[in-house]
Length: 232
Image 1 (tube, rainbow, N blue to C red):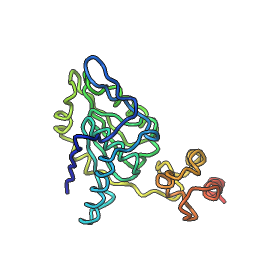
Image 2: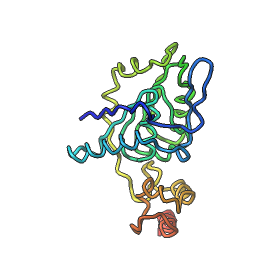
Image 3: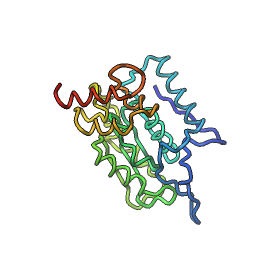
Image 4: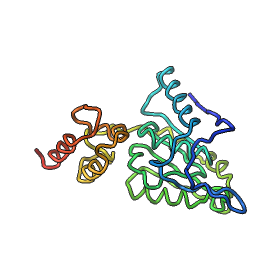
C-alpha cells in the first residue's frame, strides 16, 4: 500500500518558524525546534489520511514506512516526531529535522541522504541530525553525495540496499518504563521522565511509562520507575 499525498499550493508540509532564511542564491531551510513549530494543516491532513488508510486496509502498524524529499523531508520528520512510533523507518532526503528531538524517535530507523553541494537546503542539517541521533543511540544511517546539489533523491532512491533496508525494519516492542526505547530501564529513563512529567503531549510520547493508566505522566509513575531501578 502506497500513500503519496500532495501538498496544497497554499500550504507547506512543515513550517520551521523563522529558520527559513532568504539568501541571495536560494531559500535555505535549517533544522528547527519541533516543540515550538506549529504543525501545518497540510501535515495534519496527511497524517489523518495515513491513519484512515491504515484502518481501512488493516495495515501492519509495526511496519509503516515514511519518505520525504526536501520540504517533504521536513514534513515526514515533523510527522514522525509529533507521532512517535508511527513509522518503523524513514528516508529523510535533502531536508531537515529537530536535531535535539531524538527522544521522540526511539524505535524508528532513519536514513539521511544529502548532496554535499546543496544550495537550497544546507547539508549541515543532515550532518547535525545524524551526529545527534547517533549519539542518542538511534538506528540511523547517513549517505552524502559529493558534488551533488539539491537533487540527491535520484541517487538516494537508486541505492541498491534502500528497499531492503527499509522493509527489514519493524517497530520494536517497548518494555514498560523504557521511555527512551533503548531496550532497558536505567537511570536515563528516570531522568528523561522527570524532565517531561506533567507535560500533556508527552503522555503520547512516553505512554509506556503511564503505569497506573491514568492518561497522564505523574509522580506515581516516577516513583514506580525509581522502585524498578532499586530492585523493589
